[in-house]
Length: 389
Image 1 (cartoon, rainbow, N blue to C red):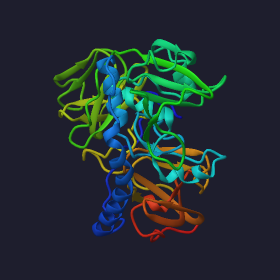
Image 2 (cartoon, rainbow, N blue to C red):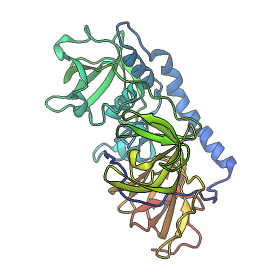
Image 3 (cartoon, rainbow, N blue to C red):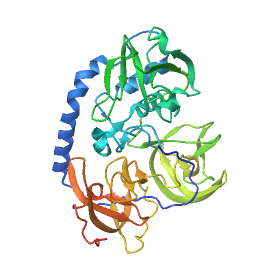
Protein backbone atom coordinates (compact mmCIF):
# COMPACT_ATOMS: atom_id res chain seq x y z
CA UNK A 1 0.00 0.00 0.00
CA UNK A 2 1.10 3.58 -0.58
CA UNK A 3 0.32 6.69 1.40
CA UNK A 4 0.04 9.99 -0.43
CA UNK A 5 1.12 13.36 0.85
CA UNK A 6 0.29 16.88 -0.28
CA UNK A 7 2.17 18.11 -3.36
CA UNK A 8 5.61 19.42 -2.48
CA UNK A 9 7.25 20.43 -5.73
CA UNK A 10 6.31 21.70 -9.13
CA UNK A 11 6.24 18.91 -11.67
CA UNK A 12 5.05 18.97 -15.23
CA UNK A 13 1.43 18.05 -15.87
CA UNK A 14 0.70 15.16 -18.22
CA UNK A 15 -0.58 16.10 -21.66
CA UNK A 16 -2.71 14.20 -24.10
CA UNK A 17 -1.20 12.52 -27.15
CA UNK A 18 -2.98 11.19 -30.18
CA UNK A 19 -1.30 7.90 -31.20
CA UNK A 20 -3.94 5.10 -31.27
CA UNK A 21 -3.15 1.68 -29.81
CA UNK A 22 -5.56 -0.46 -31.77
CA UNK A 23 -8.57 0.11 -33.95
CA UNK A 24 -11.87 0.98 -32.29
CA UNK A 25 -13.25 -2.32 -33.58
CA UNK A 26 -10.54 -4.30 -31.83
CA UNK A 27 -11.10 -2.46 -28.58
CA UNK A 28 -14.84 -3.00 -28.82
CA UNK A 29 -14.37 -6.72 -29.39
CA UNK A 30 -12.04 -6.99 -26.42
CA UNK A 31 -14.44 -5.04 -24.19
CA UNK A 32 -17.32 -7.28 -25.27
CA UNK A 33 -15.32 -10.40 -24.45
CA UNK A 34 -14.40 -9.06 -21.00
CA UNK A 35 -18.02 -8.08 -20.34
CA UNK A 36 -19.22 -11.54 -21.28
CA UNK A 37 -16.68 -13.15 -18.94
CA UNK A 38 -17.73 -11.02 -15.98
CA UNK A 39 -21.47 -11.22 -16.64
CA UNK A 40 -21.97 -14.82 -15.53
CA UNK A 41 -20.88 -14.53 -11.88
CA UNK A 42 -22.42 -11.08 -11.53
CA UNK A 43 -25.82 -12.14 -12.85
CA UNK A 44 -25.81 -15.27 -10.72
CA UNK A 45 -25.20 -13.43 -7.43
CA UNK A 46 -26.65 -9.91 -7.72
CA UNK A 47 -30.08 -11.00 -6.48
CA UNK A 48 -28.66 -12.27 -3.16
CA UNK A 49 -26.50 -9.28 -2.26
CA UNK A 50 -28.00 -6.44 -0.25
CA UNK A 51 -29.27 -5.40 3.16
CA UNK A 52 -30.90 -8.64 4.34
CA UNK A 53 -31.92 -7.68 7.88
CA UNK A 54 -33.10 -4.60 9.81
CA UNK A 55 -31.17 -2.60 12.37
CA UNK A 56 -28.33 -1.09 10.33
CA UNK A 57 -27.58 2.62 10.19
CA UNK A 58 -28.00 4.50 6.91
CA UNK A 59 -24.21 4.59 6.65
CA UNK A 60 -23.90 0.82 7.06
CA UNK A 61 -26.64 0.22 4.50
CA UNK A 62 -24.79 2.49 2.05
CA UNK A 63 -21.60 0.50 2.68
CA UNK A 64 -23.44 -2.76 1.98
CA UNK A 65 -24.80 -1.36 -1.28
CA UNK A 66 -21.32 -0.18 -2.30
CA UNK A 67 -19.81 -3.61 -1.61
CA UNK A 68 -22.64 -5.36 -3.43
CA UNK A 69 -22.10 -3.13 -6.48
CA UNK A 70 -18.78 -4.94 -6.93
CA UNK A 71 -20.19 -8.49 -7.10
CA UNK A 72 -18.44 -10.32 -9.94
CA UNK A 73 -15.34 -8.10 -9.86
CA UNK A 74 -12.03 -9.97 -9.54
CA UNK A 75 -10.31 -10.67 -6.26
CA UNK A 76 -6.81 -9.23 -6.75
CA UNK A 77 -4.05 -9.38 -4.12
CA UNK A 78 -3.27 -5.79 -3.14
CA UNK A 79 -6.25 -4.49 -5.14
CA UNK A 80 -8.16 -1.54 -3.74
CA UNK A 81 -5.19 0.06 -2.01
CA UNK A 82 -4.46 2.96 -4.35
CA UNK A 83 -4.27 6.60 -3.29
CA UNK A 84 -8.07 6.82 -3.53
CA UNK A 85 -10.24 3.80 -2.61
CA UNK A 86 -11.40 1.82 -5.63
CA UNK A 87 -10.49 -1.16 -7.79
CA UNK A 88 -6.84 -1.41 -8.87
CA UNK A 89 -4.60 -4.04 -10.43
CA UNK A 90 -2.99 -6.32 -7.87
CA UNK A 91 0.29 -8.25 -7.82
CA UNK A 92 1.66 -11.72 -7.09
CA UNK A 93 1.47 -12.56 -3.39
CA UNK A 94 4.69 -14.59 -3.59
CA UNK A 95 3.19 -18.00 -2.78
CA UNK A 96 -0.24 -18.79 -4.26
CA UNK A 97 -0.05 -19.92 -7.93
CA UNK A 98 -3.57 -18.49 -8.45
CA UNK A 99 -2.11 -15.06 -7.63
CA UNK A 100 0.37 -15.10 -10.52
CA UNK A 101 -2.14 -13.27 -12.74
CA UNK A 102 -3.37 -10.74 -10.19
CA UNK A 103 -1.37 -8.04 -11.99
CA UNK A 104 -3.82 -8.55 -14.88
CA UNK A 105 -6.94 -8.45 -12.69
CA UNK A 106 -8.42 -5.12 -11.70
CA UNK A 107 -10.28 -5.61 -8.44
CA UNK A 108 -9.98 -5.77 -4.66
CA UNK A 109 -8.46 -7.88 -1.94
CA UNK A 110 -10.57 -8.40 1.18
CA UNK A 111 -9.57 -5.19 2.98
CA UNK A 112 -9.55 -3.20 -0.26
CA UNK A 113 -13.25 -4.01 -0.72
CA UNK A 114 -14.30 -3.00 2.79
CA UNK A 115 -12.15 0.13 2.57
CA UNK A 116 -13.93 1.10 -0.65
CA UNK A 117 -17.40 0.32 0.74
CA UNK A 118 -17.06 2.60 3.76
CA UNK A 119 -15.35 5.30 1.73
CA UNK A 120 -18.38 5.38 -0.57
CA UNK A 121 -20.69 5.38 2.46
CA UNK A 122 -19.02 8.06 4.57
CA UNK A 123 -16.98 10.24 2.25
CA UNK A 124 -13.91 9.50 4.40
CA UNK A 125 -11.10 7.00 3.93
CA UNK A 126 -11.70 5.38 7.32
CA UNK A 127 -10.22 1.95 6.64
CA UNK A 128 -7.00 2.54 4.72
CA UNK A 129 -5.00 -0.52 5.74
CA UNK A 130 -4.89 -4.29 5.95
CA UNK A 131 -7.54 -6.55 7.50
CA UNK A 132 -5.49 -6.51 10.71
CA UNK A 133 -5.42 -2.70 10.67
CA UNK A 134 -9.18 -2.60 10.14
CA UNK A 135 -9.83 -5.01 13.01
CA UNK A 136 -7.97 -2.65 15.34
CA UNK A 137 -9.48 0.49 13.77
CA UNK A 138 -10.32 3.38 16.13
CA UNK A 139 -13.44 3.83 13.97
CA UNK A 140 -15.05 0.81 15.66
CA UNK A 141 -18.19 1.97 17.49
CA UNK A 142 -18.80 -1.54 18.88
CA UNK A 143 -16.94 -4.86 19.05
CA UNK A 144 -18.28 -8.41 19.14
CA UNK A 145 -16.39 -11.53 20.21
CA UNK A 146 -16.25 -14.75 18.22
CA UNK A 147 -18.29 -16.45 20.95
CA UNK A 148 -21.22 -14.10 20.30
CA UNK A 149 -21.58 -15.43 16.75
CA UNK A 150 -23.87 -13.46 14.43
CA UNK A 151 -26.71 -12.85 16.89
CA UNK A 152 -25.74 -9.21 17.64
CA UNK A 153 -24.62 -8.35 14.10
CA UNK A 154 -26.43 -6.06 11.68
CA UNK A 155 -25.76 -5.46 7.98
CA UNK A 156 -22.54 -3.55 7.39
CA UNK A 157 -20.67 -5.02 10.36
CA UNK A 158 -17.20 -6.28 9.48
CA UNK A 159 -16.30 -9.90 10.31
CA UNK A 160 -12.66 -10.98 10.78
CA UNK A 161 -10.59 -14.15 10.74
CA UNK A 162 -7.15 -14.82 12.19
CA UNK A 163 -5.46 -16.14 15.29
CA UNK A 164 -3.12 -13.50 16.69
CA UNK A 165 -2.85 -11.73 13.34
CA UNK A 166 -6.01 -10.97 11.32
CA UNK A 167 -5.75 -12.20 7.71
CA UNK A 168 -9.28 -11.79 6.31
CA UNK A 169 -12.30 -9.50 6.53
CA UNK A 170 -15.82 -9.70 5.09
CA UNK A 171 -19.02 -7.64 5.41
CA UNK A 172 -22.13 -9.05 7.08
CA UNK A 173 -25.39 -8.69 5.11
CA UNK A 174 -27.87 -10.26 7.53
CA UNK A 175 -29.76 -13.56 7.31
CA UNK A 176 -26.52 -15.47 7.79
CA UNK A 177 -24.93 -14.10 4.61
CA UNK A 178 -21.83 -12.00 3.93
CA UNK A 179 -20.10 -10.42 0.95
CA UNK A 180 -16.35 -10.86 0.55
CA UNK A 181 -13.32 -10.74 -1.71
CA UNK A 182 -12.14 -14.26 -0.88
CA UNK A 183 -8.96 -15.32 -2.70
CA UNK A 184 -7.03 -15.07 -5.98
CA UNK A 185 -8.78 -16.68 -8.92
CA UNK A 186 -12.27 -15.88 -7.59
CA UNK A 187 -14.71 -13.00 -7.93
CA UNK A 188 -16.32 -10.91 -5.20
CA UNK A 189 -19.18 -13.03 -3.93
CA UNK A 190 -21.99 -13.58 -1.43
CA UNK A 191 -21.53 -16.64 0.79
CA UNK A 192 -22.90 -18.01 4.09
CA UNK A 193 -21.06 -16.65 7.14
CA UNK A 194 -18.27 -18.75 8.64
CA UNK A 195 -18.00 -18.52 12.42
CA UNK A 196 -15.86 -21.61 13.01
CA UNK A 197 -12.13 -22.13 12.65
CA UNK A 198 -10.17 -18.95 13.36
CA UNK A 199 -13.14 -16.55 13.25
CA UNK A 200 -12.03 -13.69 15.51
CA UNK A 201 -15.15 -11.55 15.89
CA UNK A 202 -16.65 -8.41 14.34
CA UNK A 203 -16.76 -4.63 14.61
CA UNK A 204 -19.35 -1.97 13.80
CA UNK A 205 -18.06 1.14 12.06
CA UNK A 206 -18.84 4.62 13.35
CA UNK A 207 -21.92 5.69 11.32
CA UNK A 208 -20.90 9.24 10.45
CA UNK A 209 -19.98 11.07 7.29
CA UNK A 210 -21.54 11.89 3.95
CA UNK A 211 -21.73 9.46 1.00
CA UNK A 212 -19.32 10.17 -1.86
CA UNK A 213 -21.00 11.22 -5.11
CA UNK A 214 -19.73 9.53 -8.27
CA UNK A 215 -17.20 11.57 -10.29
CA UNK A 216 -19.04 14.11 -12.43
CA UNK A 217 -18.57 14.63 -16.17
CA UNK A 218 -15.87 12.00 -16.48
CA UNK A 219 -13.71 13.50 -13.73
CA UNK A 220 -11.61 11.67 -11.17
CA UNK A 221 -12.30 11.85 -7.44
CA UNK A 222 -9.48 13.07 -5.18
CA UNK A 223 -9.40 13.91 -1.48
CA UNK A 224 -8.49 17.38 -0.28
CA UNK A 225 -6.80 18.31 2.98
CA UNK A 226 -6.62 21.44 5.11
CA UNK A 227 -9.30 23.74 6.51
CA UNK A 228 -10.91 26.83 5.05
CA UNK A 229 -9.74 25.90 1.55
CA UNK A 230 -11.17 28.03 -1.26
CA UNK A 231 -11.85 27.35 -4.93
CA UNK A 232 -11.71 30.19 -7.44
CA UNK A 233 -13.32 31.24 -10.72
CA UNK A 234 -9.91 31.20 -12.46
CA UNK A 235 -6.58 29.56 -11.48
CA UNK A 236 -5.51 32.51 -9.33
CA UNK A 237 -5.96 33.28 -5.63
CA UNK A 238 -6.90 36.84 -6.65
CA UNK A 239 -9.97 35.72 -8.60
CA UNK A 240 -13.42 35.44 -7.05
CA UNK A 241 -14.12 32.67 -4.55
CA UNK A 242 -16.53 29.98 -5.76
CA UNK A 243 -16.62 27.66 -2.73
CA UNK A 244 -14.99 27.18 0.67
CA UNK A 245 -14.24 23.75 2.18
CA UNK A 246 -14.34 23.88 5.97
CA UNK A 247 -12.40 20.62 6.18
CA UNK A 248 -11.19 17.70 4.01
CA UNK A 249 -13.63 16.64 1.32
CA UNK A 250 -13.76 14.99 -2.11
CA UNK A 251 -13.54 16.85 -5.40
CA UNK A 252 -14.00 15.70 -8.99
CA UNK A 253 -11.01 16.84 -11.04
CA UNK A 254 -11.47 17.32 -14.81
CA UNK A 255 -7.99 18.52 -15.83
CA UNK A 256 -5.00 20.50 -14.54
CA UNK A 257 -2.66 23.20 -15.83
CA UNK A 258 0.25 25.45 -14.89
CA UNK A 259 -0.94 28.89 -13.79
CA UNK A 260 -0.33 31.20 -10.82
CA UNK A 261 2.37 30.03 -8.39
CA UNK A 262 0.99 29.56 -4.89
CA UNK A 263 2.87 29.16 -1.60
CA UNK A 264 0.79 27.76 1.28
CA UNK A 265 1.20 25.39 4.23
CA UNK A 266 4.96 25.27 3.54
CA UNK A 267 4.58 24.12 -0.10
CA UNK A 268 4.94 25.93 -3.42
CA UNK A 269 3.20 24.81 -6.61
CA UNK A 270 1.99 26.44 -9.83
CA UNK A 271 -0.40 23.65 -10.86
CA UNK A 272 -4.16 24.12 -10.51
CA UNK A 273 -6.99 21.61 -11.01
CA UNK A 274 -10.28 22.40 -12.74
CA UNK A 275 -13.20 20.84 -10.87
CA UNK A 276 -16.54 19.53 -12.13
CA UNK A 277 -18.32 22.81 -11.30
CA UNK A 278 -15.82 24.80 -13.38
CA UNK A 279 -13.97 26.24 -10.38
CA UNK A 280 -10.21 25.96 -9.80
CA UNK A 281 -8.25 24.62 -6.82
CA UNK A 282 -4.50 24.82 -6.27
CA UNK A 283 -3.02 21.31 -6.22
CA UNK A 284 -1.36 22.11 -2.90
CA UNK A 285 -4.62 21.17 -1.19
CA UNK A 286 -5.24 17.96 -3.16
CA UNK A 287 -3.73 14.76 -1.74
CA UNK A 288 -1.14 13.33 -4.08
CA UNK A 289 1.95 14.53 -5.93
CA UNK A 290 2.26 18.12 -7.14
CA UNK A 291 1.00 17.08 -10.60
CA UNK A 292 -1.92 14.67 -10.18
CA UNK A 293 -1.22 11.33 -11.90
CA UNK A 294 -3.38 10.47 -14.89
CA UNK A 295 -5.10 13.88 -15.08
CA UNK A 296 -4.91 15.50 -18.54
CA UNK A 297 -3.70 19.00 -19.24
CA UNK A 298 -6.46 21.60 -19.58
CA UNK A 299 -4.74 23.14 -22.58
CA UNK A 300 -3.13 26.01 -20.73
CA UNK A 301 0.40 24.79 -21.41
CA UNK A 302 2.28 22.41 -23.65
CA UNK A 303 3.68 18.98 -22.88
CA UNK A 304 7.31 19.01 -21.75
CA UNK A 305 9.87 18.23 -24.42
CA UNK A 306 11.26 14.69 -24.12
CA UNK A 307 14.61 14.67 -22.36
CA UNK A 308 17.73 12.53 -22.60
CA UNK A 309 17.03 11.40 -26.16
CA UNK A 310 13.62 10.04 -25.15
CA UNK A 311 10.38 9.96 -27.12
CA UNK A 312 6.98 10.93 -25.71
CA UNK A 313 4.17 8.37 -25.87
CA UNK A 314 0.67 8.29 -24.42
CA UNK A 315 -0.41 5.45 -22.16
CA UNK A 316 -3.88 3.95 -21.89
CA UNK A 317 -5.77 1.97 -19.24
CA UNK A 318 -6.33 2.63 -15.54
CA UNK A 319 -4.35 1.58 -12.50
CA UNK A 320 -1.19 1.03 -14.57
CA UNK A 321 2.10 0.49 -12.72
CA UNK A 322 5.73 0.97 -13.63
CA UNK A 323 8.41 -1.25 -12.10
CA UNK A 324 12.07 -1.11 -11.09
CA UNK A 325 12.84 -3.94 -13.55
CA UNK A 326 11.03 -5.20 -16.68
CA UNK A 327 9.03 -7.66 -14.60
CA UNK A 328 5.57 -7.35 -13.01
CA UNK A 329 6.92 -8.84 -9.77
CA UNK A 330 9.62 -6.16 -9.42
CA UNK A 331 9.12 -3.20 -7.10
CA UNK A 332 6.48 -0.66 -8.12
CA UNK A 333 7.95 2.75 -9.01
CA UNK A 334 4.84 4.69 -10.05
CA UNK A 335 1.09 4.24 -10.43
CA UNK A 336 -1.05 5.84 -13.15
CA UNK A 337 -4.79 5.86 -12.25
CA UNK A 338 -5.61 7.16 -15.76
CA UNK A 339 -3.92 7.64 -19.16
CA UNK A 340 -0.89 9.94 -19.08
CA UNK A 341 2.22 10.78 -21.11
CA UNK A 342 5.57 9.01 -20.59
CA UNK A 343 9.00 9.65 -22.08
CA UNK A 344 10.57 6.43 -23.38
CA UNK A 345 14.38 6.12 -23.53
CA UNK A 346 14.67 2.61 -24.99
CA UNK A 347 12.91 -0.75 -25.09
CA UNK A 348 13.85 -4.39 -24.54
CA UNK A 349 12.42 -7.89 -24.76
CA UNK A 350 11.93 -9.23 -21.23
CA UNK A 351 9.12 -10.87 -19.23
CA UNK A 352 6.07 -11.83 -21.29
CA UNK A 353 2.94 -10.13 -19.95
CA UNK A 354 -0.71 -10.87 -20.72
CA UNK A 355 -3.16 -8.09 -19.84
CA UNK A 356 -6.35 -6.57 -21.24
CA UNK A 357 -6.50 -9.34 -23.84
CA UNK A 358 -3.01 -8.68 -25.23
CA UNK A 359 0.32 -10.50 -24.83
CA UNK A 360 3.70 -8.80 -25.28
CA UNK A 361 7.27 -9.29 -24.04
CA UNK A 362 8.42 -5.76 -24.93
CA UNK A 363 9.10 -3.31 -22.10
CA UNK A 364 9.98 0.38 -22.29
CA UNK A 365 12.51 2.12 -20.03
CA UNK A 366 11.35 5.60 -19.01
CA UNK A 367 13.44 8.67 -18.20
CA UNK A 368 13.16 8.03 -14.45
CA UNK A 369 14.66 4.55 -14.90
CA UNK A 370 11.35 2.72 -14.39
CA UNK A 371 10.06 0.05 -16.76
CA UNK A 372 6.59 -0.28 -18.26
CA UNK A 373 5.14 -3.08 -20.37
CA UNK A 374 4.46 -1.89 -23.92
CA UNK A 375 0.93 -3.25 -23.65
CA UNK A 376 -0.11 -0.01 -21.95
CA UNK A 377 1.72 2.31 -24.37
CA UNK A 378 -0.27 3.40 -27.41
CA UNK A 379 1.30 2.11 -30.60
CA UNK A 380 2.42 -1.23 -31.99
CA UNK A 381 3.88 -3.95 -29.76
CA UNK A 382 7.44 -2.75 -30.57
CA UNK A 383 7.50 1.07 -30.50
CA UNK A 384 8.68 2.68 -33.74
CA UNK A 385 11.78 4.83 -33.63
CA UNK A 386 12.76 3.73 -30.11
CA UNK A 387 16.18 2.17 -29.65
CA UNK A 388 16.84 -1.21 -28.09
CA UNK A 389 18.18 -0.94 -24.54
